Length: 201
Image (cartoon, rainbow, N blue to C red; front, side, top):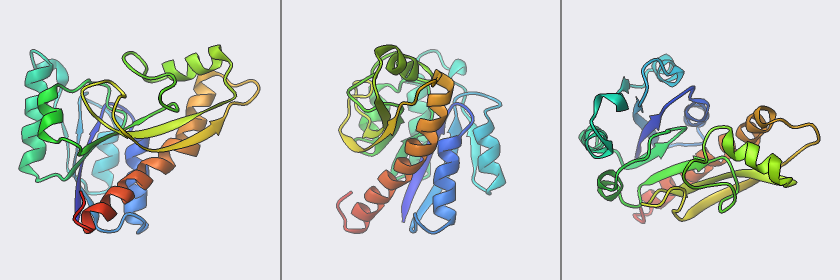
């Protein structure tokens, strides 16, 4: 069984994609230990509750710095014996203490084809705005391991999405989520769950 802890900050559409694939049997031998939000009122917490998944808010603003916050998150997931941490629309940069605690066991989904439109400051609509301003014809999403460099960890899986005439950042964001993020995040989890079953993760 792959025990998954999920970090969120907003609506939780990527969380929903994971829940759906667990419930339809695609992600067998996978279970979400808890969903943790950095912000109060995040709809992702309601999504989790609707499916009987423990959900809690650990607000970033209640901690003096990233180190203290990251330690609190690490203790939470360690108490649940989480095997894998998934950043599913989590907008807080984690301190190295968290990354080291779960070394090679944290993954993130990013809305571009890394190494394009990534790194510090590239989140939300910003990668999509940048893609449209640059005039690229293909964008997409990437699932990668998390290390000390923002969006700098080893790539697990990518999926391309075509940019269409008349796209706005909002339209492109929705298409990238639907056609790429929601597909490859569960696929990456499946890859890692199969590795765990073989004793390789």
